[in-house]
Image 1 (tube, rainbow, N blue to C red):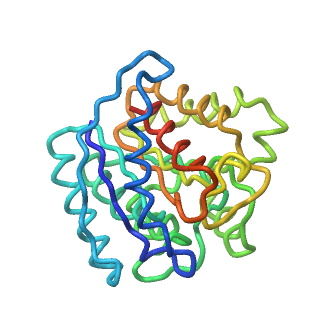
Image 2 (cartoon, rainbow, N blue to C red):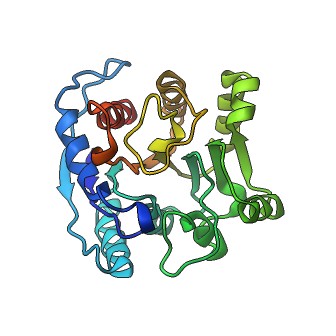
Length: 263
């Protein structure tokens, strides 16, 4: 599979410092893993995307163009971020190649704040929806546990499918996974985006927004193993890992583990 390192931090606003180091650190820890838990040997063709973090719009254009070229070759692609705004150009490229594609997002926040131009890590999903790059009915959010009044209003008005941490913990994890898959299997292609803050900070402290009450490592891996059973997963990203905020490389190692299981 093709694995892109994208050291983007320009879309992270006040939380940007250190995110640019995430891709290299995750790639370094990938060397510690061998077979996945399902017995597969992950083989990666690592590609660096050079971007200008002083110009977010230009960085997004570069990301979209680089990914578009590889998608045309029908590769399975993974992205190492970097801040979550990279999902905006990445999914644009993915949707262009796969009309009608949907996106499953694991995140503590819905990222549908007021529209910025270019999109940041706080509003990239809102922009994807408002620009009709993704149909709002083809969006699934998992792990949400902190949102603003404006974000809740947007989600309610647009009937976005949200599986909050409250629902995930009080209902069966299996039932939530079943529900997600029952929707996603109908899409022509699916994109998975994993913000590392979807996990509880006890497992992933190395990120800008540490939100208590998140998924455990094993719960997320369960979701990944279930989603890998779908035949329409075409691309994924793992974002918001900040090595400067990490403890004993826990978060970088966890991100690498996620990538191995998604490969």
